[in-house]
Image 1 (cartoon, one colour):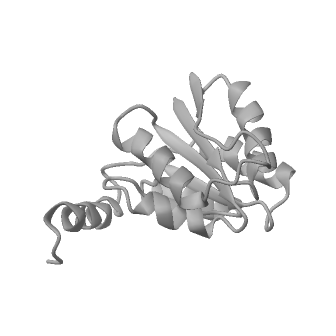
Image 2 (tube, rainbow, N blue to C red):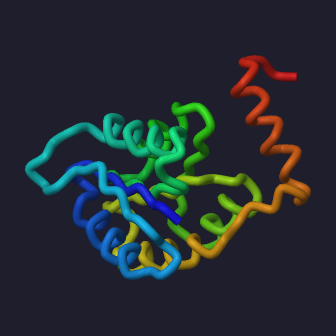
Length: 154
Protein backbone atom coordinates (compact mmCIF):
# COMPACT_ATOMS: atom_id res chain seq x y z
CA UNK A 1 0.00 0.00 0.00
CA UNK A 2 1.27 3.48 -0.91
CA UNK A 3 0.43 6.14 1.67
CA UNK A 4 0.64 9.90 1.21
CA UNK A 5 1.13 12.02 4.32
CA UNK A 6 0.81 15.77 4.79
CA UNK A 7 0.47 18.33 7.54
CA UNK A 8 0.58 22.05 8.10
CA UNK A 9 2.86 23.66 10.66
CA UNK A 10 0.40 22.80 13.45
CA UNK A 11 0.48 19.10 12.61
CA UNK A 12 4.00 18.46 11.35
CA UNK A 13 5.23 16.81 14.54
CA UNK A 14 2.40 14.27 14.59
CA UNK A 15 2.71 13.73 10.83
CA UNK A 16 6.40 12.93 11.22
CA UNK A 17 5.67 10.38 13.96
CA UNK A 18 3.00 8.71 11.83
CA UNK A 19 5.33 8.74 8.81
CA UNK A 20 7.97 6.82 10.81
CA UNK A 21 5.34 4.28 11.90
CA UNK A 22 4.16 3.82 8.31
CA UNK A 23 7.71 3.47 7.00
CA UNK A 24 8.29 0.56 9.38
CA UNK A 25 4.99 -1.20 8.56
CA UNK A 26 5.28 -4.21 6.24
CA UNK A 27 1.88 -3.41 4.71
CA UNK A 28 3.21 -0.11 3.40
CA UNK A 29 5.37 -0.17 0.28
CA UNK A 30 5.89 3.58 0.01
CA UNK A 31 5.31 6.71 2.09
CA UNK A 32 4.97 9.90 0.07
CA UNK A 33 5.44 13.04 2.17
CA UNK A 34 4.06 16.16 0.48
CA UNK A 35 4.92 18.43 3.42
CA UNK A 36 5.43 20.41 5.44
CA UNK A 37 9.03 19.67 6.32
CA UNK A 38 9.08 21.58 9.60
CA UNK A 39 7.33 24.11 11.82
CA UNK A 40 8.85 27.03 9.91
CA UNK A 41 7.06 26.01 6.69
CA UNK A 42 3.79 27.93 6.88
CA UNK A 43 1.99 26.57 3.83
CA UNK A 44 -1.74 26.53 4.54
CA UNK A 45 -3.55 23.26 5.22
CA UNK A 46 -5.73 23.47 2.07
CA UNK A 47 -2.64 23.44 -0.15
CA UNK A 48 -1.38 20.29 1.58
CA UNK A 49 -4.74 18.51 1.84
CA UNK A 50 -5.42 19.09 -1.83
CA UNK A 51 -1.91 17.99 -2.86
CA UNK A 52 -2.23 14.74 -0.92
CA UNK A 53 -5.73 14.01 -2.23
CA UNK A 54 -4.58 14.69 -5.80
CA UNK A 55 -1.97 11.93 -5.38
CA UNK A 56 -4.76 9.50 -4.48
CA UNK A 57 -7.04 10.67 -7.29
CA UNK A 58 -4.17 10.28 -9.77
CA UNK A 59 -3.47 6.72 -8.59
CA UNK A 60 -0.05 7.65 -7.18
CA UNK A 61 -1.11 6.72 -3.63
CA UNK A 62 -3.71 4.35 -2.21
CA UNK A 63 -4.48 6.13 1.04
CA UNK A 64 -3.56 9.24 2.97
CA UNK A 65 -2.96 10.43 6.51
CA UNK A 66 -3.33 14.19 6.94
CA UNK A 67 -2.81 16.35 10.02
CA UNK A 68 -3.62 19.93 10.93
CA UNK A 69 -4.62 21.55 14.23
CA UNK A 70 -8.06 19.90 14.36
CA UNK A 71 -8.04 17.53 11.38
CA UNK A 72 -11.11 19.30 10.04
CA UNK A 73 -9.45 21.65 7.55
CA UNK A 74 -7.41 18.96 5.82
CA UNK A 75 -10.48 16.69 5.68
CA UNK A 76 -12.58 19.39 4.03
CA UNK A 77 -9.77 20.15 1.58
CA UNK A 78 -9.18 16.51 0.62
CA UNK A 79 -12.91 15.97 0.11
CA UNK A 80 -12.92 18.63 -2.61
CA UNK A 81 -10.90 16.34 -4.88
CA UNK A 82 -13.15 14.17 -7.03
CA UNK A 83 -13.10 10.52 -6.04
CA UNK A 84 -11.53 11.10 -2.63
CA UNK A 85 -13.33 10.49 0.66
CA UNK A 86 -11.69 11.80 3.83
CA UNK A 87 -12.74 11.90 7.45
CA UNK A 88 -11.53 13.03 10.83
CA UNK A 89 -11.23 9.98 13.10
CA UNK A 90 -9.92 10.32 16.62
CA UNK A 91 -11.19 6.93 17.77
CA UNK A 92 -10.81 3.33 16.60
CA UNK A 93 -14.46 2.71 15.78
CA UNK A 94 -14.78 5.77 13.54
CA UNK A 95 -11.56 4.85 11.76
CA UNK A 96 -12.84 1.33 11.15
CA UNK A 97 -16.23 2.47 9.88
CA UNK A 98 -14.67 5.14 7.66
CA UNK A 99 -13.16 2.36 5.56
CA UNK A 100 -15.62 -0.51 6.01
CA UNK A 101 -18.81 1.56 5.63
CA UNK A 102 -17.68 4.59 3.63
CA UNK A 103 -14.65 3.47 1.63
CA UNK A 104 -12.61 6.47 2.83
CA UNK A 105 -9.08 6.56 1.56
CA UNK A 106 -8.00 9.39 3.84
CA UNK A 107 -7.93 9.65 7.61
CA UNK A 108 -7.20 12.97 9.27
CA UNK A 109 -6.11 13.95 12.74
CA UNK A 110 -5.96 17.10 14.80
CA UNK A 111 -2.57 17.46 16.46
CA UNK A 112 -4.24 19.72 19.04
CA UNK A 113 -6.90 17.07 19.69
CA UNK A 114 -5.24 13.64 19.76
CA UNK A 115 -2.02 12.38 21.30
CA UNK A 116 0.65 10.74 19.16
CA UNK A 117 0.37 7.26 20.69
CA UNK A 118 -3.38 7.05 20.10
CA UNK A 119 -3.01 8.43 16.56
CA UNK A 120 -0.36 5.82 15.76
CA UNK A 121 -2.53 3.04 17.19
CA UNK A 122 -5.50 4.16 15.10
CA UNK A 123 -3.35 4.35 11.94
CA UNK A 124 -2.04 0.84 12.56
CA UNK A 125 -5.59 -0.50 12.89
CA UNK A 126 -6.85 1.57 9.94
CA UNK A 127 -4.29 0.05 7.58
CA UNK A 128 -5.87 -3.37 8.10
CA UNK A 129 -9.40 -2.40 7.06
CA UNK A 130 -10.83 -2.83 3.59
CA UNK A 131 -14.12 -1.85 2.01
CA UNK A 132 -16.43 -4.69 1.00
CA UNK A 133 -18.07 -3.76 -2.31
CA UNK A 134 -20.79 -6.34 -1.56
CA UNK A 135 -21.66 -4.81 1.83
CA UNK A 136 -24.91 -3.09 2.74
CA UNK A 137 -23.03 0.21 2.58
CA UNK A 138 -21.86 -0.26 -1.00
CA UNK A 139 -25.05 1.17 -2.52
CA UNK A 140 -24.73 4.25 -0.30
CA UNK A 141 -21.13 4.84 -1.32
CA UNK A 142 -22.14 4.32 -4.96
CA UNK A 143 -24.84 6.98 -4.54
CA UNK A 144 -22.20 9.46 -3.35
CA UNK A 145 -19.92 8.54 -6.25
CA UNK A 146 -22.78 8.85 -8.76
CA UNK A 147 -23.65 12.30 -7.43
CA UNK A 148 -20.04 13.38 -7.60
CA UNK A 149 -19.73 12.21 -11.20
CA UNK A 150 -23.13 13.46 -12.45
CA UNK A 151 -23.42 16.54 -10.28
CA UNK A 152 -27.04 15.96 -9.32
CA UNK A 153 -28.93 14.03 -6.64
CA UNK A 154 -31.18 11.21 -7.75
